[in-house]
Amino acid sequence: MKKKLYIETYGCQMNIVDSEIVVSILSEQYQVTTEMNEADLFLINTCSVREHAEQRIRKRLRELNALKKRNPYLIVGLLGCMAERLKEQLLNEEATLDIIVGPDAYRTLPQLIEEATIGKHGVNVLLSKEETYDDIVPVRYDSNHVSAFISIMRGCNNFCSYCVVPYTRGRERSRDPETILQEAEILQQKGYKDITLLGQNVNSYRWNDHGKEIYFAQLIELIAQKFPNIWIRFATSHPKDISDDLIDVIAKYDHVCKHIHLPVQTGSNNMLRKMNRVYTREYYLERIKTIKAKIQDCSITTDLIIGFCGEKEADHQETLSIMQEVGYSSAFMFKYSVRENTKAAKEFENDVTEQDKSRRFNEVLDLQQQLSLESNQKDIGKTFTVLVEGVSKRSEDHLFGRNSQNKVVVFPKNNHNIGDFVSVTITQCTPATLIAE
Ligand code: SAH
Ligand code: SF4
Ligand code: F3S
Image (tube, rainbow, N blue to C red):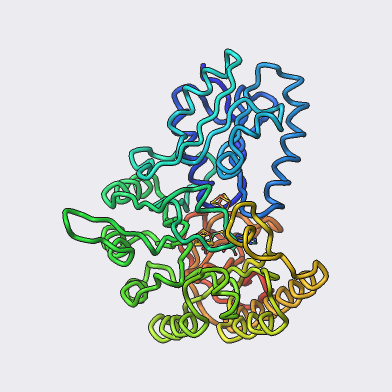
């Protein structure tokens, strides 16, 4: 009989796939349980992107002390970005932990776990220039069997001055397209209808195939041609690599979804320069213009950082105005959080007062709420195809799914099922949801 593994995942979508890879690596010895009291092994896949993310995990580790007191044989492992950032230091700080494993070292988990069973604490936080886990088939242990993520590249070379990711995930590297197609094939055979290609900068994908370069646009085209009945999504795109080729390929195929998540971070050129984002407001807006001209009904979403070092009222106003100019259909908004050892932490002063940060944050939030509502109101009366992902949380008689624009749509169940493509007409909306018939 296999031992029981309980795994908890924090942070971004990359971490969700990484957890699926970890479950695959451990699948000979362990099977996943959803009951943490019966776990032999408790893994927690962590995020370091903001202070708050780490605090949540620290709190969770304290809660695990009680579980470990009840079951002294329980092995607790910390994976992911926080493991990479804090390394063995965590073993001293968090008595609950037996092993610490960084994002590129998951293949060594079986060995580290075995050593932990005889009381030896293990740490492996080596980063790799090559590791993409491309031969490992992720175990989709927490899946709706309709949509899945495929990791196509790892790491980041951009060193935005505020960001911890290049330090926790290491250098950028892309995965062999053959293995990406194989993974998509397996998903298709299992009945999956929607894949999301993932990378920290997914559109910086680049593979050299015997002297021929394959860029992200070509990769999408390869997948689109081979899988005409699967919806293809992707995240996260960096503005610097939104090429015309990529925009054209999104426009060309109906089943390449009409949604681009394009983090702008701020509307101010001063702030963009300080953030090392390597584009200007004007460049970004030109890309948006091209997207809107070439792709019909493309939704654009973004990430925003509020209150970065030296942000003045005028910079903040530029953020508000770029939001309006683009008309984002939704956005993730964050107050700037200082991350140790980044360029911003070392060289810039975190000088926006908490009061200003909060006020600006609320102004950004309010504006986005209004933009999301406007974007959704424009859809009333339109007809969309929706891929059904589940039963609505609010009502058993309703299903929910996403359309090509990545908007959540809720509609009456009738005789439709999870995994169906259903044509619906939008009748009402909230800022977060489209309601349809
Ligand atoms: N690679 C992606 C996103 C990575 S992290 C990209 O470059 O777009 C996701 C988001 O977290 C970022 O887009 C940014 O908005 C936010 N973020 C990263 N570091 C942050 C920090 N120190 N404080 C606040 N938000 C941060
Ligand atoms: Fe962080 Fe910038 Fe890399 Fe995104 S592109 S992960 S924000 S360093
Ligand atoms: Fe967090 Fe690491 Fe993802 S820092 S956002 S889990 S890459």
